[in-house]
Length: 121
Image (cartoon, rainbow, N blue to C red; front, side, top):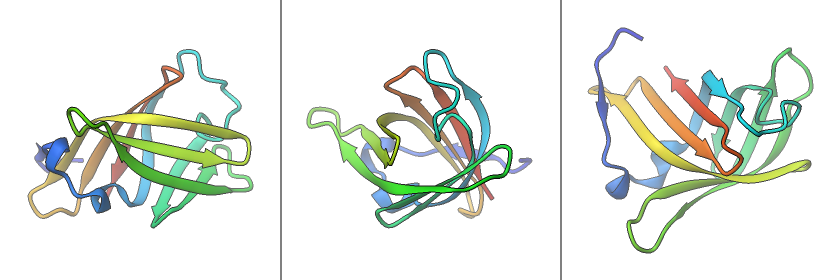
């Protein structure tokens, strides 16, 4: 991604910014089960309330639900994911967007310790 990306203030960010089709650009598993749907995902599709994970290597997708939650004190966003075999949440640690809004980069830190960087173009 050659466009300059700008950091977005997560406390004032509309929840709609998290939706869309995201490509997994980087992942560190730590203690996460390497066979879990999120650990194997090549792409996440976040439509209103609906989650679809598409795995590596290509195979059947899994669908579930997702939601944005915010802590009461700092208003930090968390993404809650519920799939048939996995339920977890991830702290949004960074969101960057290009000035035209066409390119985005989302960094997540999961309760299991997994870290994921997602790109949208």
